Amino acid sequence: MEAARFDWVYESNVVYDPEVEVQERFADPDTGVGKLRLTSAPWISTHVYPEIPVSTPDGQRFLFHRINQFSGRRDIWIADVPTLRIRQVSDEQDVRYPVIAPDGAWFYYVAGRTIVRFDPQTCARETCGEIDPRFGAIDRMCSISLCGHRMLIPYTNDETSGIGCFELATGAMHVVYEHPECFNTHLQYSRCDPHRLVFQVNDGVERDENGTFTRLVGKHGCSIHVINDDGTGHEVLNVGRAEDEHVQGHHCWIGRENRIITTTHRRARPGDRWSQDRIVTIAPGETSGTVVCEGGPESFTHVHVTSDGRHWVSDCNRTAKIYVGSVATGQHRLFCSSGTSFGAPQWTHPHPFFLGDDRTIGWNSDESGIPHIYVGRIPEGFVP
Image (tube, rainbow, N blue to C red):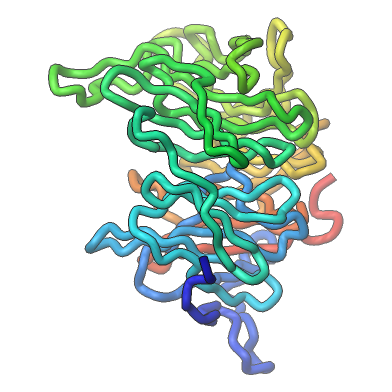
């Protein structure tokens, strides 16, 4: 397949006039961080999700979604950070779930039931195979193994939900894990083991007679699991399983370590108000997690970690502020105020994430009234 016939366009808030460049109002008033907007057209533009790798290793290019709010059509675009230009790369119907291979050689996405990959430099595409319809609907983000040979695909059918492993060379697919409550997986392949993955199960789900969710999670919250992609080595991590501390629902691997970082909400006693103010790390086999930071006026919702595992970024769902900090010490500081509404639609959530260079952060914001994507550079010496 040839590249989709679209041109690079420029929609940034950075103008060519050397006397203006970036208006002062686009510098965060508290930190001075420049908030560079890459989109301005009246479409929903939104980052993919914090823990899903969609940036080249050098941080120069990354993928995002653009959605027509009237038709519901969703397309995948690529952004070039050095030039602040953007380009549409998909032209198929029903396009979802972009992800990049760990070596940065290929971007992948799902179009209907077809897996497509394309070159991040030329945008030339090729088909990798078709997903067997017996696995049901493909309904969540995918992940590529460290070796680049396999793709994890979440699915839901009339009987259950689960995770499938698709062999990119042959098109064969097998079941890794199935459970009726495994429908919101947040799955991710390890970056130190080509067969290990982490995923989430929403324990205690309740549905009505029509199958509509009436409760997304039970009294003990969701659980975080690790497993090999052949279905062996299944383990539930010992984090957020108490009545007064729950896993918040977002997690990722810490660099190339066999260790997970996650956010939790907690309360001092039953009946108290929940507080999302704790970041925890844990490895398989540990009896409890290690608290990275907690307390204070901040809350921490979505979380992502640099590729070297040194720093984390998270957003506060009360203020929509974005914080960066140290995994080792927990020291953190405000990066910027995103200004977004943090409402029900996912594209109003900041969803901050590190690009591949570990020096640039991307996030969403609808502070202009329209959801757009932003990037900002971390100043030298900004975090320990």
